[in-house]
Image 1 (cartoon, rainbow, N blue to C red):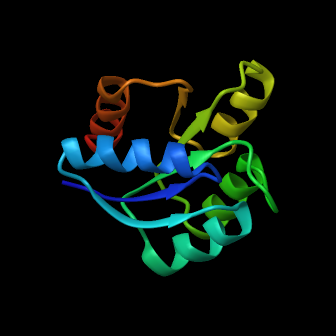
Image 2 (cartoon, one colour):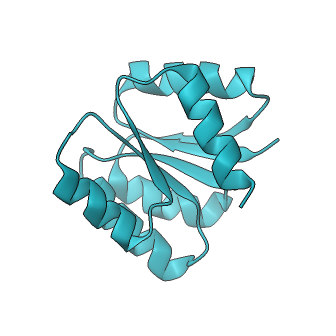
Image 3 (tube, rainbow, N blue to C red):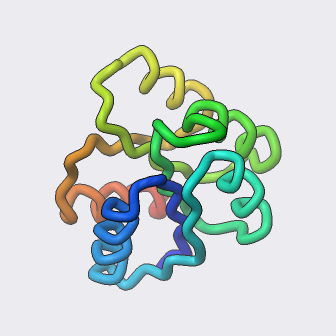
Length: 120
């Protein structure tokens, strides 16, 4: 299926996402725990898709999106957030995030979002 990178500072969320991705026959290319590392590792791995937490140390999700899109304009990024702040979510979408998933999430929503984005 797809090669996917996970950027989230929560061990528990990364574990849940890895389980969900394995159900969907996706490969986890890499995992990072902060925004600065997300930008660097994305360029090294060039994944099909990035699952990106909004609130991370060193660089927040919005900054990561802007930096990755500047270097990789066709990057596919799904923002993952517990925030209900529509202004920041919209700023992320306007900056290049392909879509977003609200926490807590269920595996069907995650897999459907991934499938929808990869089909584009």
